[in-house]
Image (cartoon, rainbow, N blue to C red):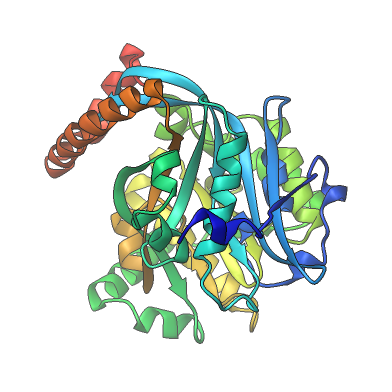
Length: 393
């Protein structure tokens, strides 16, 4: 594979400054939510954020698309959650693998190589590419694993350990889904449902919010719960900026994707799930619950309510996507998985060479410390301490 093989391949940068600039016909074809620039456009909320969308055309038809979210970020030299040093960069983030039309059945490596070589000519030394959700057996992963010409242009840096991306693939009804889980998980789910219903004397309801008119009511309830969570109070996460969230969800509701839930007990919200239903896949994006209800596992109870609700309409959903982060609950509740990882492409330059060498060394140490903290259940306590000390942000 040489540069000469890619010279006739030209990815075109197209405008995505507004939703109106995006051709909706292209996105009637099969793709992931994170590959659709109409979704990614909702994250462009400040002047320092934008999309860079590259398309590949053949006979006047788009056969491939890569939409990068361009935003300020930083490369960190860190040990576990303790940042030792950081370097400001502009990051080109690709949330999902590059989309190819199903008609493209040839080797995609040349197309991918052409894109990243083209990008390298445009990037400064302060700009980096961050690839999320790179599947272990994907064309992109295979191309990056080879000693290709990209190695002379970029440092290819694995960021963190490979992780399991968990899913539920639905083939039938709710009972069929339960039958695919382990007997202990089925028993735990039934016990959780029974305990919760008994504890609240049946005085609960789960509401699904979908229309633009319902976005405000969802945020009223969900943000009330989110403000009580550990993630919100100690990690700076959760549902925070109402204007940004409202604009995003109004956009997705108008597109017919918004599909979020709140669990109420006696009219009081106790748990929520932000999610979107896109091309028969439900994307579970953020969940939160009132810590006062933790013993009753209201997050798990809400999950069972959501699955039951989704499967009540035939052919509405074929897959449930738990998102990138993995945990024990996702392992137990899923029936499918994919191994993925995060990868940085950092332009070669003497300054970046030095920084990357240091990152690699500290990443190895950080991984070892992280495993040790997880083994003894100390990671959460350490994160809380570092947050209070102002070391972690």
